[in-house]
Each structure stands twice: as C-alpha cells, then as structure tokens.
Length: 358
Image 1 (cartoon, rainbow, N blue to C red):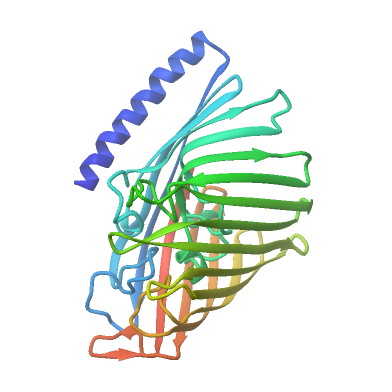
Image 2: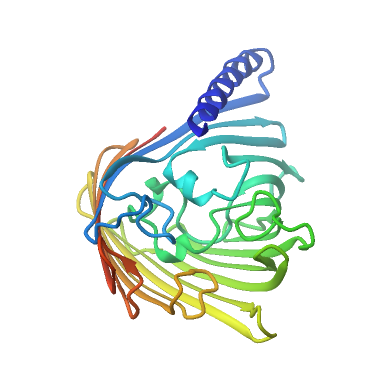
C-alpha cells in the first residue's frame, strides 16, 4: 500500500512540476525547483536477531541481513515573491519505522513560508516540517556518519506546527515554535495543549555553529494520561580547518512520573569527528553515551545505560553520490540486545549504503 501510494504521489508531484514550469514561462516571478534523495543499504547485525527490526529503538538502517531502501524522497519547492512552499513525499524502512503512528506518513514535508519584511529577517512557516532539534537529519547525506546517534534516534525528526524565525544579522538566528507534540504529525490526544519550543543559533564564523533548542509540552502516556515534558538540546559544530570537523552534542530531558509528581530524566552526550583524507575520501569516528534508567524515551524493560562507538568510511565519487560503510558497537549495563537465542550486553553492526542526492 505504501509503495502504491508513493508511486501515485510521485506521478502527481512530477505532473505538478511540469505544469508549474509552464507557468514559469508565463509568470517569471514563480520559481520551481525539483529535488530528491535515494538511499539503499545492507546491514548485518552480528547478534543475528530473529525479528524484522533489529532494535526497537533504532529507526534508520534497522534491517538485518537484508537489502533495503532506508529512504526515498521527492521534493518540489515553489517560490513566489515573498511566499514559498515545500512538498516532499517519502517511502522506505525509515518511514515504516519512524512514522508508524502517523496516517499521513507519506509526507516528509508539506509547509508554507512567508517572509514578513523585504529584508527577509522575519519569516513564518506552517505545516509539516523537519525538526528544529538536533544536528542529524533524516537523509544521511549531509550527516558526518552513516547511521544516526542514539541522541538523534531518540529526539524528533519532524513536527507539525508553526515556526516564527527572526534573523537579525548573519551571526544570530532566533525561533519560536508551537507544534502538535513530540514528533507528531497528528495530535494523538485532543486534550493535550499545543507544545512550545525555542531555538537559538549563533554562528560567529562560517565554520562554527552553536545551537540551543528547547521543548516543553504535554506528552500522552498510553491513551489518556498526559505528562509534561521538558527538553534541552545543545550542540557545537566546529570546522577546525579544511580537513577536520567536530560536533559535540548534549541532550537532557525531564518528564513527570505517571505514579506521582516526581520527575524522571534522561540524558545523552555525543562526540563526532570527521577527517577529509582527500576530496573523495572521508573518515569519521563517534563516541556516545545515553542514560534513561526509567525508560522515559527508550522503553526496553530495564535501565537503559548504553555506550556506543562507531567508525565511518566514505567514498564520494562526485557531489551527488556517496558510498558509505560504518562499523558500530554498543555496550549496555543490562542485557537488552536480542540475539539469535537469548539476550546480551553488547551489539555489533556493520552497514553499507549508497546514497544519491539531486
């Protein structure tokens, strides 16, 4: 069903582009761009899990011993005077896993933006948008590593709502966001109030970015219970020179317990460093730690305390294509990883992907 819907939507999107291009000839102010992304992968989990999804809390590259499409996406971007719109459709194992609770999971993006002034310092966007939280995106092409950190997998990739962004100068960007909830297209509980968030981005140079994002709002637990969630995301992205780049990220969240008014918390830290060997070859290493002892975010039925490490090699034959291979290792205090028989405290995963972005 998902494949059939994606095909129909793709035909509609391409048809829209064709007719839009005809309109461009008649009205030069309307601009239309068409882009896309496709990532195929193969992964092998040395624990040899028997389930279709190798780890319940991993949403990207989540298949074992199987050739799969992590994500395929087609996007149309339209601009007219001070208004722009993005419509993107998607399919793949990432969509099946990460959007499993959504009836509108066909849409990766569907939003409208309006510049409120001629200098384009004030802009309002509304609709289904990429998340303002975190430094790793759904498409791995621009990420330093092939797979996502536990930090990224455990925070929103998308949201539906309204975002106001103010860019006073080339060093600062400030945003206020109201949404349907923590990674929600549709609101699962009508009793929940809209959630709120902020984003502050400071870029003192073109190679350094400091980002602080926040989230506060009601989060449904089960069918009827609502609990207030508070969340902070902080990261520094710094390019040391033309070859070295480092990202250091820290998340911390709090949520009221379903038993009493005490707060449960989770926290995580991630460090990634990439080195460009040549124009065509990159290597990257990552170390990370995630702690969620009371399973607020990662429900594994045991205290979640996991250390992870990975090593990544990229071959980039041209600007549109990437062949990436990554070795990834997890170590847990509790035996939370499924094996062919029983459970274990560690997990080793090897994955290769071929990604095309146009």
